[in-house]
Image (cartoon, rainbow, N blue to C red; front, top):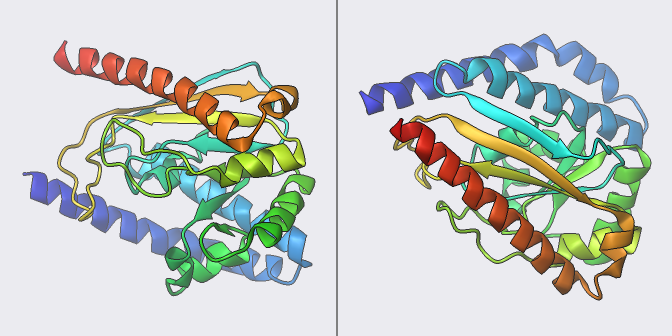
Length: 251
């Protein structure tokens, strides 16, 4: 039964990818004629809508996602830091509805079609770019009123314990004086695993918390101090969310 659900999940997802990108092909081609920053802004918006529709509608027959906004209502452009348990996190980060560029390792940007599109949309290569070039692109993103969605663990944890954070994106936040928001994703540590197999299908919880304001970010002496502060906050939130999901599962 689990094999059949996996097969159905990937079949429906693949069909949706084809339908969506064929449907928006003409608008996307028109956007490609815009100047660089505007082009990247609008391509990110197409990716945002794609992610939202995927999670809210296409994947709904397989699992549901509870989204909670526990911020103070602030939406100033900033860095959105998220934990990274599985591959579907790249879609779940669309739930706050924030137009943003994701940070990625260099290899996904080399994938035919999808990687090229992500690069055209201004996604940020955290392994192939030097810091000054990365910082310039980040500044352009914030100037457009957009966000940076960062996975500071650098790779999937595939567990309830976060990997240690890298400092780079926190240095960006301090250099550019932007707030840091936190998106906590719980329940999907085996959805899917590293071999892209879903070991289970269960409802998930996603919680937006923060922000750490520009002042709070600047008060941290270094990016190392800032990343550890964010790590502690997110660890506490995730422990609470995992406990809630376990309780609901056992009812």
